[in-house]
Each structure stands twice: as structure tokens, then as C-alpha cells.
Image (tube, rainbow, N blue to C red; front, side):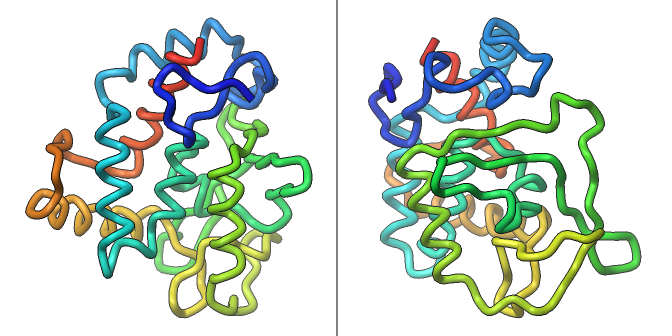
Length: 212
């Protein structure tokens, strides 16, 4: 692995050791990814802001329990619905790879639905850094006992609520609203307004652009 210019270990990622499909799918080349990343650059967090946020979360009695998800989002660029849809079958800890080919969302009228990618580029493999792999291992070891559930044939969801049911994007939107409000009162460094899970995806793209 080659470290990025920022030095933040969450972003140990380069174009030299990971296939193009990790970044955007089979029809994305490295130059296309860089261009997209630069377009997103102003929307993400700087390294010192990431460090301040993670430091705050580690010491907070409530939000420390969500630090694994933040590390995963920062280190993979996953959409929140893609992260929520991950199952045990999608995680290969031996080869340090995440396979992404679907998203999980709340169905109209209740329950869940699985959405397939709209384009082939939505199907991709993502390499796991040490920090991301450790976060997945911790989530999988400490999650509640799952309730028997199959959503469009998919089982073994990784990110569960206290009832043993899969979390969805709306659950994390509420978490981030609370985190944003509490950090604004007690955090040591100002963060851009409107922090959401998608902000972390933008941050990942920015770091990827810096990595060249």
C-alpha cells in the first residue's frame, strides 16, 4: 500500500494497487475517477477535520458506537444505502475485498427492498484498508443477534439495529443529525454545515484524487 499525501491512515489507497473497478465500475478509468473526485473536492472534509470528528466520536458516550460506520464510509466511498445493504456474503476478509452490487432501502408501506444498480458501473469491488477491515471485524463481532430475514433472497445483513433488523439510510441520517448538533456545541474544530453520510463519500473522493 502507498500512503496518500495527507498521511491519514484511513485513506491508504492508490490507483497502483487496486483495479479501476474498485473506484467506479468496469467502465470507469482512473482519469474519469480523478475528474469526478475533483468536482466533489470542496464538499468533503480536510484531514484535520476528519481527525477532529473521529476524536470527538471516540470520547463521546453516545456516538462512539457509530465510529466503525464512519471509518468505513470514509475509507470506501460507499453510498449509505450500499453500506446498509452489505451482507456477510459481500465481505471477503481474507482477500480484503467488498463486493457491491445492490442497495438496501425502506419499502413503501414498511419492510425492506433491494435496489439493483442502474448501470453496470454500480457493480464493483472495493479494497479494504487495515482500518476499514478492523471496523468491519468489530461490527460483525459486536452486532446484535439477527432476526431471521430475507430481502429479495439476501440474508446475513451486517449493520443491524438493537432489534436485530437491518439499518437503512434514514436511520443513519438521524444519527448524523444528532452527531452534527452535538459536535457543533462541543467539537474543537468547525466543520462545514450539513454533515451527512454522503459528505464522507465526497471526502473519500477528495482523498482519492490527492492520491493520484
